[in-house]
Image 1 (cartoon, rainbow, N blue to C red):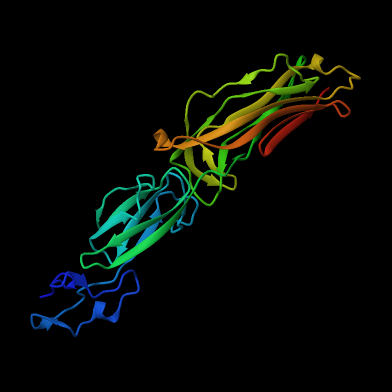
Image 2: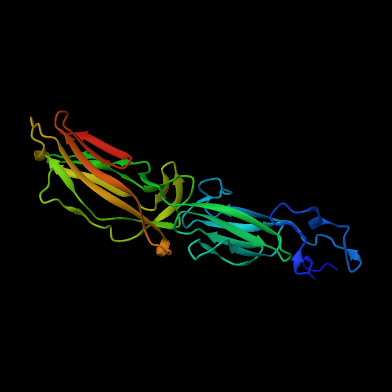
Length: 291
């Protein structure tokens, strides 16, 4: 028979840790109680696969806050799972023993080491680089500009997105914050007006495009003025700016709450010399010439 750990009488194992096992680990010539000791302390490796199918590389170890990763043992065997140096802020494992577990990433940027240990002391580890949202963008836009007999409206509709685009933030949610306008010229408003908090958290989708993980719902970005705002022969330019905080958090707030990861400028502007009325926000913009 083969006792647990090969040297169980001394309380230690002769096997080395990790995937670099000593030749003794798989020694088939040793004996225990007079018989062969076959695979007494087998070596193994941790395999990983992201729950998210986008981005397409599902064996990546760079992941977004809140991302989930399926972990398994190859060859399959029961192990004890742990997060190295866990202080309660490094994410969660769905179970601490067995051949599989699911790691849910923490809500702040960290390097996280997951460890698996078998019954005779062999170990393997896998390290994840957890990323926070780095910048805000918009996916492809739809033009919603129009001119009527009395008004001009300029803008677009597009899904907000969070970079980087090499991870998924599908387990996160989004909200715009409060700011006060800065306006001048022909677009001046007195007193300046506030942009309100959007009032609720909106979930991200599983779609990860070139502009990052996209929100489940589109944002309608538009400015609308009466044509009389822009008199023929007028020479005064105009600007209106809301520097809007973009906030994100792992769904239900996780431990540390929301991150203000970027400020996107909601910026209507008017150039009198060309009579161009323009609406820009983040990486997208639309414009019309005032008739």
